[in-house]
Image (cartoon, rainbow, N blue to C red; front, side):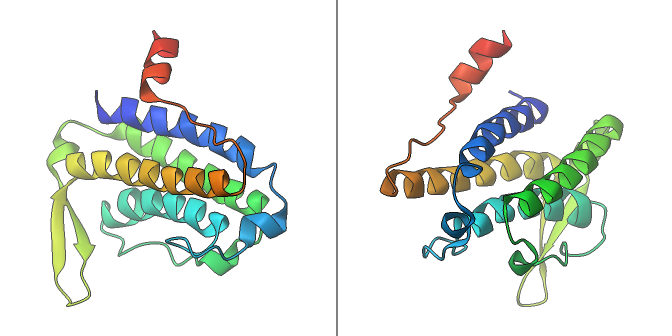
Length: 162
């Protein structure tokens, strides 16, 4: 599997998740549930910020990340708008990405003032894996709410792709 396939898979899984999120009332979507980022809204927004921060700020050396805050997003429409913006930026990045770019350094600022350094290739695996982890967190919350989670396995994805 390569990073392009991994990104394609997580974006298709996200589309199924967003369909389910759109069925929630806004109160259910924004309710503080004590998740890793309080609400379902904040968790899904975090997943978009992960992609934005790593690929569109840290990789090109534009700083630690976006200045957007969870409070900037009031509903699923706001989240989907941001998701579309980041998707467009990621598509443009992938169009011009070269094999040489995969070895370039990506720095993540640390609280002590230092930086952790990774290759872009590592980041291109990290982003989808972290995102999928948080999808599981949302699924668990769905199950607590007696809502079927929109599980979409990689095996189903690869079978449909073939």
